Length: 125
Image (cartoon, rainbow, N blue to C red):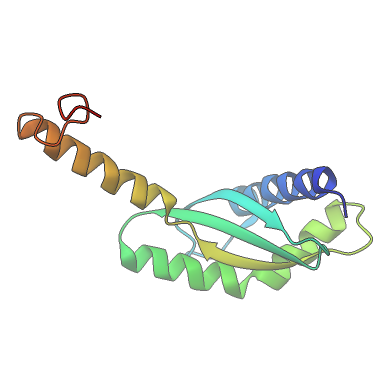
């Protein structure tokens, strides 16, 4: 499958999952979930759905379990909405990139407060 088509399918799946979670999810375990991206495999058999959750580890774990348990339902719902010959299997994965980005911001802020120690512009880089 062409890369451009996979990306289009991935974005459509992301939008549909967001819509279903926002409007149709009755599972109280799904907290404030944001679907950050979807990556469809080369053969379009799998779609890795990356998500983040507002809250602590307990909320993240609860939402992750609920999303994984509802993968079949979501796949069926999306399959009915889209005209695809084959609907990929949904695999939910927690997106750690926002946490990592926040950690980097904290480190940079700490360095800034220490008076610029380790500042690349002063270090002659």
